[in-house]
View 1 (cartoon, rainbow, N blue to C red):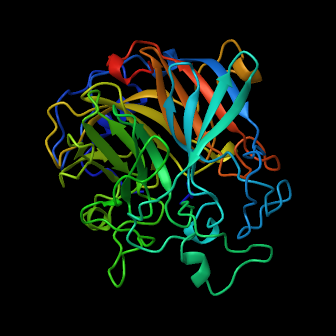
View 2 (cartoon, helix red, strand yellow; view 1 turned 135 degrees about the vertical axis):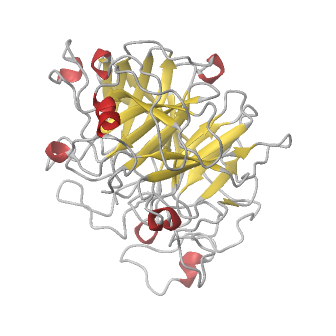
Length: 437
């Protein structure tokens, strides 16, 4: 959640121009580690249109929940501490057959140090594009570790008691194994065929496996050779991934047998090798018993700028994916918020996936004035972290509003949780197993 230029040495100017004009002919071959390539052209981004929009108010709290934000100051619009647990920070989503969405809240308020009182939770919301209102329906559960599978101290079971000081008005809760933003930063979500949940997180980065009630099923699965400064097992080791650059996106194969977690930022080894624009897409097959393990192999995704970041990564079939790539700007300063179609077919481990511009979220035609916005529609939020399939021609996109942050739509009004539906100019080759229901 926390907001955090290399020249592309081997891309020619003509190839860069192909991104701005994706209908031009480009090569359809895998990219070697020295030369990333683009994929076959799809419909021009200008042919996509906005067809639906709704919003959930920023000040939406879980009814009857604990207060939060004791380690933050809030702002003039929403002073801290907050009267409950905010339903905010949508970092992962899953569309249900009835048109509602599961939404995963991230670690809370942007960092391990200020989110100890934020309970990690899964909510259900229902966008209504006719009224423009998104309804908060319920909180399904808060994530827990009742079997004590986490081999280090958690906040609500020893961490709080060991703290040298606590903010005014906050007292340690009774030990209950509920997980908080001090423990993990969940950023991506997939539902396995057996109904269990897989979560990609950023502190490790780890893969987390939960049952249908949000209870941890196995110990956190570490990423081979990668650790962030917030990794609880770091010790005296040197981290090689910046904070908040872990598994921002994670796809699942149509058969539900392989996870593809994707880092938000480059690892130190790649940056040192002049590959600071590269993001790694790992693979983790799911075994028959439901557990998963990394193969250690990864493919590469080349960002348009080393200053950009990943927003989300989902599958549309066994070799094509959608990626949100974004800049770290918001409001009038925002320039680059895009969705790319990515193809891994024929791309070996260590090589570059192909990418083709699909939607420019800063320039989406809106001839009907959906949501009361002008034409074109822009989605100028700092963090855009959710893309989901509705059908083979329609996608949904949501922002992480970084509650109680301002700056996306207004300098003074807290950003809402916005939901937008976009009709594509041409159908995607969607595997129906990846559609709700």
